[in-house]
Length: 216
Image (cartoon, rainbow, N blue to C red; front, side):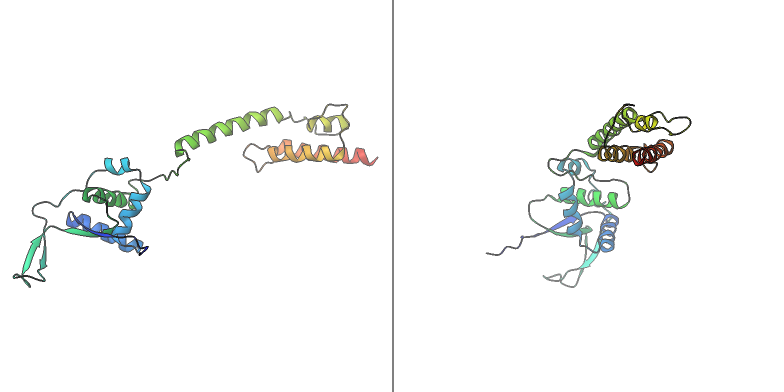
């Protein structure tokens, strides 16, 4: 039994302008028209495609001339509706395919966009709202951990302990001090959007003071 996906050839009547635009887009993307339609049908929610305006059938005067290839009229010109031949898996409707191709054109012209939401994922607007909430939470954390910079800089052990968030009579070991410094440096580094050059400078001063104090 073959593992190949069966495909059906759909004849999609449309205006000659729409046909030319779709074929030009497929050529630019180096795909066939069926690939365009299938990509949109796979990515876009069914309701989005259903609500998209149908580009519609060609107007009565919009016809193309072709030569009949077989039958009694072989070799004679025939006026017919412009169309697209689309090879895709079976199960799609002509209007559905035409709408998908219309949406593909709109996306290519930046008149529409698609946000891909995988199962279990949340829409972009919800993710963005949660990100904004997280940023506000981080701002609150920074405000709690932020110290008021000392006007004359850090000169004493007590001032150094204050800047690093320890009580003035604390005796933290070097490992604890380094861990506290790294945490605060991550928050207050000027490259951080919530950082502060002045606070980072005083953190470095505090470490220098404590190192000199331990060396005595």
